[in-house]
Every structure is written in structure tokens, then in C-alpha cells.
Image (cartoon, rainbow, N blue to C red; front, side, top):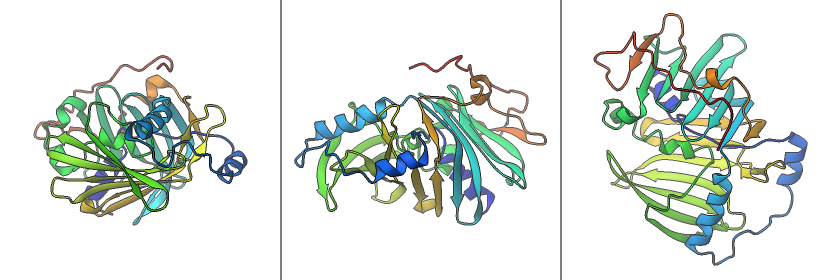
Length: 300
């Protein structure tokens, strides 16, 4: 996979969040239990939104030390993932043979990514408020803030227009949402399990009806500590970039973090890697090394 596709693919993760945890035997046992209906067969839009938002809205942090990411043309990488609302995210992936391969994350001020195999070697970053007006936006067809939802923590914004639910085959509902972006309006199609209220698919289309991105969630499981339901595996695709990636979350701890918060949410330095500001690519801030304040403890 070439460097451009690597960089685009990794941006898919920026701000992405989700998942919950318990031991595998408990998960398998719960996965095969009979489905409990939480939505009526003729659910209203308000009922669907309430079920989805109550579950996702209760997830404010998570961490996993047993995740993995894979994509055609690249080796499977073991990964550590951490998240804290609203924008703090960290994914570090490695192999046993080569060590660190990927480091990407986001804090309250900016997002960044570093890939060992990219040329030239660099830590790329962009401040959140500069992304919409930056040249980087044209290379990344999807707002990274939307991609927060791709791993399963999906909330319907009451300020946005929603349509549905439209019944689909296989006991599913579809809810459509139109969002205004710097590149024009996009339509998001959210597919929900009509019995359990789980979000199983998300698709984003541009103003011309072309599919920009897809996230398909599988292996939904209930965390016995929080009673929250999230997927364990997510497939992310971008047809325009000819990119796909599988994310397996492993044993995720929900509303609990593993690691030092001050280190988790700080943009890293890597030997030989320049700092390149995507908000001002003509003049990288090699000496300007911004850091965001890190929380001392998990709080809502």
C-alpha cells in the first residue's frame, strides 16, 4: 500500500471511539442468548433515536490493549487504543518484529498521525479549528469528526434533520440524516437492528449520491459491568480512496482508561520525523510543538 493510501486510511481512525469489555467466555455466552426486543415493530423516529442515544451517550471513555487492525496489502498489527470524550483518542499499533508502526491520535487542540513506512518520515498534525479550511480537507473526503462514530458510538444530534425510520429486510430500520459540511451537504444512512436497537451499518453519501464511506459493525456484545452494548469488530471502507480496514477491539474496558493520561493525549516525537502542520503545509511548524492539557482523571 502506498504512503498516500496509508495516510488516508489512518485518518479514518481520528476521533473514532467505542467498545466495551469482559472475558471471552462471558461474551460468547451473551452473544447466543435470545434477542430481547427493545424497539416495537412500529417504532417511531423518536423511539429509535432514544434507544441509540441512551446507549452511546453513556460511553465516555474506553481502552483496549488487545486490539488489532488489518487491511489488504498490509500486515495485521496489534494495537492499543484509548478514548475519552469529546476528542481524545490514541491508537498505537506495532508488530513483534519491527516495533512501532502507527501512532495516531487526537486531543482537545489537534489530531496527528505517524506511520513508520511513510516517506518522507514525519508526524503530520492539524489543529481541529484549522482542518475545515486547510488543503488537507481536499485530500480527506470525510470530516474526521464524523468518523468518531464509525467504531460504534453513534449519537443522533437533535439539531440535525432526521428522516425515518424506514423498514428494511432482516428486521432493520434506516434513519437518514443530512449534514452540512465545508464540501457541501452529505447524507448519512444509519442502519439499526429493529429488535435490539444496535447500529449495524453507517453509510455516508455526497451531494451526488456517491458513497464516501461505510462502517459495518459486527459481534455486538453487552458489557456486564455497564450494561452497554457495542460491537467488537468494525469494517471501514472508503470506495473513493479504494481503502478498507478491519478493526478488532479485543478486550475493551468501557469507561475505564489504561495508561498515563498526560502521555496518552500528547502528540509524540519520533527520531528523524519532522513535524508537518497540515493546516499550513507550505510552512511546517518544525519548532512549534503544541501540546494539549491532559485530564488528571476520567470525568464526564
